[in-house]
Length: 144
Image (tube, rainbow, N blue to C red; front, side, top):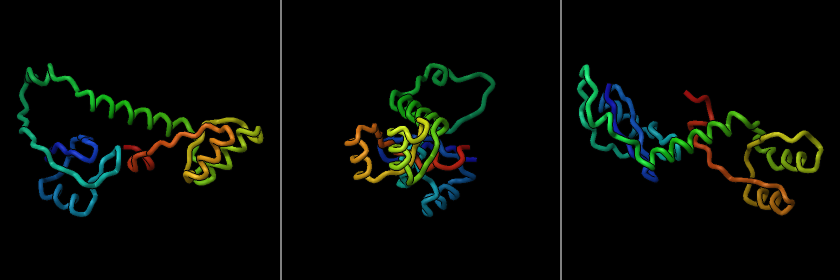
């Protein structure tokens, strides 16, 4: 098993686990490796230090703190996961459902879905709060 350090657009960094270096190359050439945050498939392999399993933890691993960028990325992913778990996906019916709730035709609840820029602007003009939030493709299906 090869553990590789990967970098995607916007400096998103992750570890990738592959059966071999050839497996990584094969998956990359078929655009099967994508960033879980931005879905970018342009991946750069970063240098990876070999790991040797020992009985005692290494000192530099004990004192290494995660970077601020990684902490922010992790917090954003957790927020998106929470939003996905606590809202109903109404798909392309989003503008209609938002209006129905706003005008008291249905119970207020957390919803998410798709709306064109024009629809979102029209909702805002009606006093309905709308926030555009890009959701990583990896979170749209079952999360492993």
